[in-house]
Amino acid sequence: MGYHVEVERTDDGGYVARNGRGAEIRFGTADGTDFTPVELLLAALGGCNIVTVEPLTAQRHHRLARLAAVLESEKVKPNKLGPITMTYDVTLPPDDAEAEPVFRAVAERVHEKYCTVSTALREQTTVDVEIPETLTS
Image 1: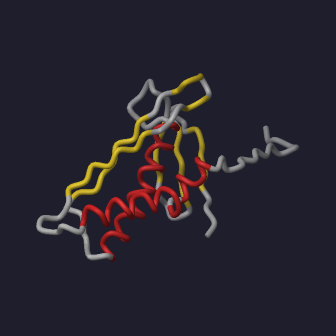
Image 2: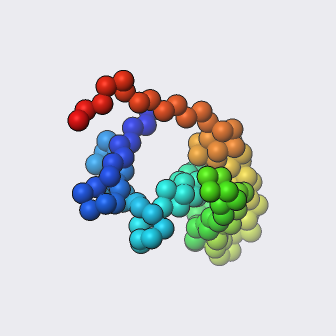
C-alpha cells in the first residue's frame, strides 16, 4: 500500500496536509492553537497503535469500554526529540476477567510488530529529500 500526502503553506500563514481521499489537517507552530509537526508525530504514533489494538482485541471478543492513550516527549536539542512515552488509558469491559491479559498481550505485540509508525521510529526509516533542478518562479 502506498501513501501520498501533500503539505503546503496556506495564504493565512498556516500549513495544511492533504491526503488523496480529501482529508485535511491544519498545523502550525507552538505559537498558535493548531497541532505542531511534533504533536502530529505523537498523534500518528498513538493513533497507529490504537487503530491496530482495537480490532485485534475485539476479534478476541474483548471490546474495551475505553481505549485511549497519552503521548509525551520533550525536545532534548533544538532538532532532536527525546524518548516518547505512550501511556494507555483503558477501561476494561465489566465482567470480563480475560480482557486485561488479552489487551496487554495485544498492545505489546502491536507496538513491537504491527504498528507501522512504531516500527518506522524504532528502525529509523530513511527519509530522502528531493529538490528539483529547476524551480518555478
